Length: 281
Image (cartoon, rainbow, N blue to C red):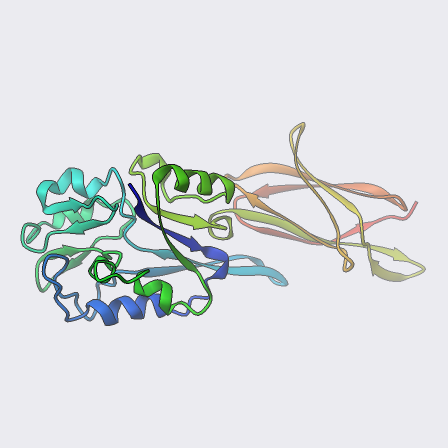
């Protein structure tokens, strides 16, 4: 049995809001019997985007995290909502607009905050994967078509094939600890939920400060080597995908023509260490 999945590439998202607008255009004021009731024009977006800025000037980056219904295989909303929630054979989760009326508890059950409450209709609502369009032989939901940077990929395949692809491409899901088994996967999620340590390596010679290219940079935690890289032609380095756990790390920097240097750093957020000066041997 082939089922729908959605892959979201965090690195490609520029926060243009086209996906939000396409969902609003499709659902605001429009009723699709058997699928969904009209969505409100305000205060209940079926798709949302969060912004995260990592680091400090001059080394920082911005990432955007798109949130929408994850169409979970063990959906918490289904556990709470019973027959008001329908899990289709193709993996799509639909909220019955009749049976779910007045059921605010369904909206509150979603650990992703992806079920919105339509105050006017007193109805919980979700992004329905544009099931009404797919059933009319559309090849993909509107969010895929609306995105100018190729953030989304809709994939209909078997669970085994999807799990293999997730492993091969290092795809992740949000809140795996809930056991909800979502069908929305994220690529390059580290851009949003991980930290980096960066710096610029320099040395002074004859009163002139210059960058140090090809210096070895090793990140240690205790006696364990976590990552290794080299400075680029501008003397800059960046080690990414670190947990924001407030842990203590050691950055060891070495170059054949300089004395080695060690820098201690605490990581609870992305850190730019500034200029790290090496002394020539």
